[in-house]
Image (cartoon, rainbow, N blue to C red):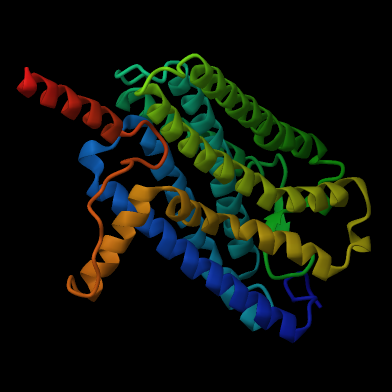
Length: 341
């Protein structure tokens, strides 16, 4: 039995392939909807929202480039393509994974900056800066993904034989510095920054609410930011929670004998980590009223306009950042006052 032959039972292989197929379909459909909605409202989109679009691109890229090969390999009971596809799979998986966690980190920092003055009508982060941040995210991820190709670290098959990633068990000595650096700069540091930023935002919202109890305008803005904060926190927590078990098993392979871990045990964290590409559109749909409304409108357009009715009431117009509707309501109120005068 070679390293690319499944060490699982045929039934588990088929079940794994079916699971990955469901994850792939949900991820592709969900993240495509996010991108379609972004294109539809591109004229009114705020610069920081480009980060949420960039996050959808990373999830979609992972689903399209990785999951079909993984499904085919699971149903073939061995990894298809040998060393070439294994290195490719490990590289793109590492690339999209690092791009996602760094995108979430930048998003947390940007949201923290935006929250410093909730009542300011001016954008604190312009289009040029956001585009540069997105480009930096991909460049940073690409550099890390190329390190194993250039000799610092290495890619290889997972112990269960149906997936490829960083060859954790083979980097106990020659790649140990890479592992420590990778976990420090791509997991520990981003997690600390994300926690600090969202904790700071929560404190800022609390004190802003306490000092504006007599205002009719600020509480509405705070409610909006509180909902946006919930969305951002859930997305960050979901991603980290999905990858934490895989990280723990990988570290065990570094510091202990990986052969002591049954293949089925190494399979579960890997499959759980792959589900991270599905959660973001679901969170948007549950917590973002505008996203839910536009998805329903698209469904009605496809099934026929007479089959359903969608309310035109608008409560928010963004996934992550300050809603334009909050300002438009204030402007409308001012217009009515001018007419009355």
